Image (cartoon, rainbow, N blue to C red):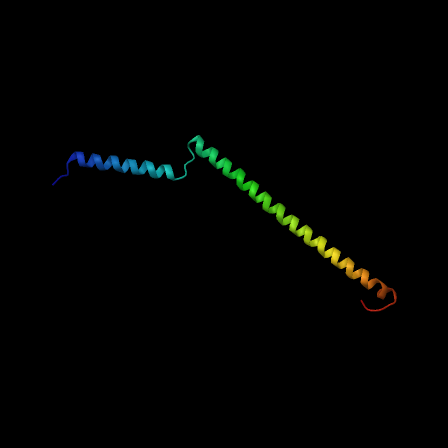
Length: 88
C-alpha cells in the first residue's frame, strides 16, 4: 500500500519547520542581532576578566606591602642586638 501524497507533504513540511527551528538554534550568527549580542557578550567578558586581574594584582601588591612592613618591624627590633654582635 502506498501512503497518500498529502500525508507525505504534511510530514515533509513539518520536517522542514523542525529543521529551520534547529538551524536557528545552531548558533549561526547570520542576523545583525546575533552579531551584536556576541559583541556585547565579548565586551562584558573582557571587562569581567580585566576586573579579576586588577583585583588579583591589588591582592598581590597588598600582600607584599604587609610582608615588607612586618619584616621592617622585625629588623628594627633586631638592630640593637645585631650592633652588639648578638643573634637576631
